[in-house]
Length: 342
View 1 (cartoon, rainbow, N blue to C red):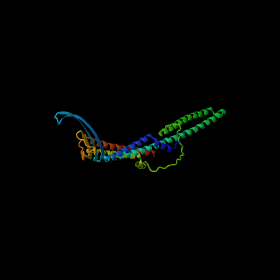
View 2: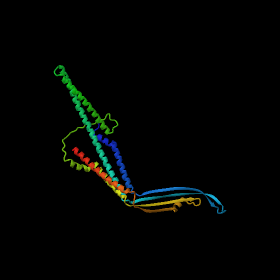
View 3: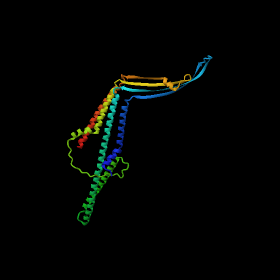
View 4: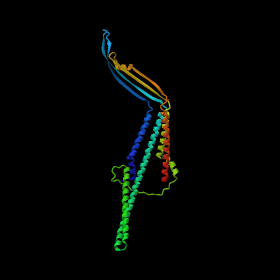
């Protein structure tokens, strides 16, 4: 038998939607880490080995007669280069902020989903309890009616009451049997609904514990507006919508960064080794004597990019408007739920 706490705990551990949201949150956390790592310089190495073969005509120095000779040579190149962005209109910084708000929003969505799952499980659990009580009450009433049929039948046989009374009671019993059948079906469906919400593979022997419930009069202080003023500060769906709005604002800052010049610095080091049939040297000596290195600064000034920057800014502003409406709608939904519950 499952208690309400058992059902909620099992659902939070096994619900597929919850697992999907957890993966989404992990993905957004990984995206945030990547955006932070993008601030680091890049470093890449390279190496290449080339083999060249050929045949060409030369003049023999001793005889002055042309002759053909074959040539072969090998080239080995290696090196490394690095690049770091010094300034790019704070695009990287705003990207980190955007990803931070995206992660915070996803975390609040996860908490809201946990709340909804717990609430839905509790409602389904209470529905089973209600249907159980209705079945028990109707079954008890049907038993009383059947006892009444037996007593009335004896009275009819004794001639004390009219047979019409017996027929009325039998009709009542038939109606109660039909009602009991319908209620039993409702109970079976309630059990199935709860078991499916738990995503149990086998629901044949599934049953719940009937708790001892004591209902005391509860005085609710305040009014819907004062309750809402507290709830909007803590409810995860409100916090999620607020973080999404901040994420949209960061996207606008990123888009505006496209108007700013960017400055980057690069550096490189390389060496090579060459060997032919006319010139041979040790590999170490070649690499020691042949090398290049250097660094440079690159300034990129945006002038015209097909209006992509301006359109990106317009789209980001529309994203802010959309997030503002989404936040307003979420607040109205929360207030409506509080008012109805009150």
